[in-house]
Image 1: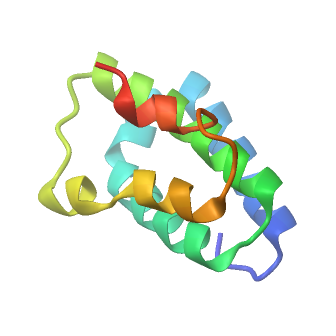
Image 2 (image 1 turned 180 degrees about the vertical axis):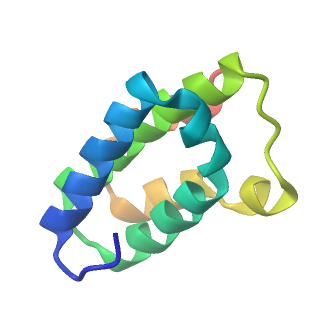
Length: 102
Protein backbone atom coordinates (compact mmCIF):
# COMPACT_ATOMS: atom_id res chain seq x y z
CA UNK A 1 0.00 0.00 0.00
CA UNK A 2 2.80 2.42 0.72
CA UNK A 3 5.33 1.50 -1.96
CA UNK A 4 6.35 4.23 -4.38
CA UNK A 5 5.30 2.36 -7.53
CA UNK A 6 1.80 3.16 -8.77
CA UNK A 7 1.53 -0.38 -10.21
CA UNK A 8 1.53 -1.64 -6.62
CA UNK A 9 -1.30 0.77 -5.89
CA UNK A 10 -3.24 -0.77 -8.75
CA UNK A 11 -2.78 -4.18 -7.10
CA UNK A 12 -4.12 -2.72 -3.84
CA UNK A 13 -7.22 -1.42 -5.65
CA UNK A 14 -7.75 -4.82 -7.26
CA UNK A 15 -7.54 -6.54 -3.88
CA UNK A 16 -9.89 -4.03 -2.29
CA UNK A 17 -12.35 -4.64 -5.12
CA UNK A 18 -12.20 -8.37 -4.39
CA UNK A 19 -12.86 -7.57 -0.74
CA UNK A 20 -16.06 -5.79 -1.75
CA UNK A 21 -17.38 -9.06 -3.10
CA UNK A 22 -15.85 -11.53 -0.66
CA UNK A 23 -15.50 -9.66 2.64
CA UNK A 24 -17.73 -6.58 2.66
CA UNK A 25 -18.02 -6.54 6.46
CA UNK A 26 -14.23 -6.43 6.83
CA UNK A 27 -14.01 -3.73 4.18
CA UNK A 28 -16.50 -1.60 6.08
CA UNK A 29 -14.42 -1.96 9.24
CA UNK A 30 -11.40 -0.44 7.50
CA UNK A 31 -13.26 2.15 5.41
CA UNK A 32 -11.65 5.04 7.29
CA UNK A 33 -8.16 3.75 6.48
CA UNK A 34 -9.12 3.23 2.84
CA UNK A 35 -10.43 6.78 2.56
CA UNK A 36 -7.23 8.19 4.07
CA UNK A 37 -5.00 6.06 1.82
CA UNK A 38 -6.92 7.09 -1.29
CA UNK A 39 -6.86 10.75 -0.31
CA UNK A 40 -3.09 10.66 0.19
CA UNK A 41 -2.38 8.70 -2.97
CA UNK A 42 -4.47 11.02 -5.14
CA UNK A 43 -2.06 13.80 -4.14
CA UNK A 44 0.99 11.63 -4.69
CA UNK A 45 0.25 9.81 -7.95
CA UNK A 46 -0.20 11.69 -11.22
CA UNK A 47 -1.26 8.67 -13.28
CA UNK A 48 -4.68 8.99 -14.94
CA UNK A 49 -5.25 5.23 -15.01
CA UNK A 50 -4.77 5.04 -11.27
CA UNK A 51 -7.04 8.03 -10.70
CA UNK A 52 -9.84 6.60 -12.84
CA UNK A 53 -9.56 3.25 -11.06
CA UNK A 54 -9.70 5.00 -7.69
CA UNK A 55 -12.94 6.73 -8.59
CA UNK A 56 -14.41 3.54 -10.01
CA UNK A 57 -13.53 1.78 -6.75
CA UNK A 58 -14.99 4.62 -4.68
CA UNK A 59 -18.26 4.20 -6.55
CA UNK A 60 -18.35 0.53 -5.59
CA UNK A 61 -17.25 1.27 -2.03
CA UNK A 62 -19.93 3.91 -1.53
CA UNK A 63 -22.55 1.52 -2.88
CA UNK A 64 -21.53 -1.03 -0.23
CA UNK A 65 -21.41 1.60 2.50
CA UNK A 66 -24.82 2.99 1.61
CA UNK A 67 -26.40 -0.45 1.46
CA UNK A 68 -25.04 -1.11 4.97
CA UNK A 69 -26.24 2.27 6.34
CA UNK A 70 -22.66 3.36 6.99
CA UNK A 71 -22.32 6.84 8.46
CA UNK A 72 -19.23 8.80 7.56
CA UNK A 73 -17.15 10.07 10.44
CA UNK A 74 -16.46 13.79 10.54
CA UNK A 75 -12.92 13.21 9.23
CA UNK A 76 -14.20 11.08 6.34
CA UNK A 77 -16.84 13.67 5.54
CA UNK A 78 -14.20 16.41 5.38
CA UNK A 79 -12.25 14.64 2.61
CA UNK A 80 -13.16 16.50 -0.54
CA UNK A 81 -12.84 13.90 -3.28
CA UNK A 82 -14.70 16.17 -5.70
CA UNK A 83 -11.92 18.73 -5.37
CA UNK A 84 -9.31 16.03 -5.93
CA UNK A 85 -11.13 15.01 -9.10
CA UNK A 86 -11.22 18.60 -10.37
CA UNK A 87 -7.47 18.90 -9.77
CA UNK A 88 -6.76 15.92 -12.05
CA UNK A 89 -8.28 17.51 -15.17
CA UNK A 90 -9.86 14.19 -16.08
CA UNK A 91 -13.11 14.30 -18.05
CA UNK A 92 -16.08 15.34 -15.99
CA UNK A 93 -18.31 12.47 -15.09
CA UNK A 94 -15.60 9.85 -14.58
CA UNK A 95 -15.93 9.86 -10.83
CA UNK A 96 -17.98 12.93 -10.12
CA UNK A 97 -21.17 10.93 -10.55
CA UNK A 98 -20.19 8.93 -7.48
CA UNK A 99 -20.40 11.97 -5.24
CA UNK A 100 -23.30 13.85 -6.76
CA UNK A 101 -25.97 11.16 -6.88
CA UNK A 102 -29.01 11.95 -4.78
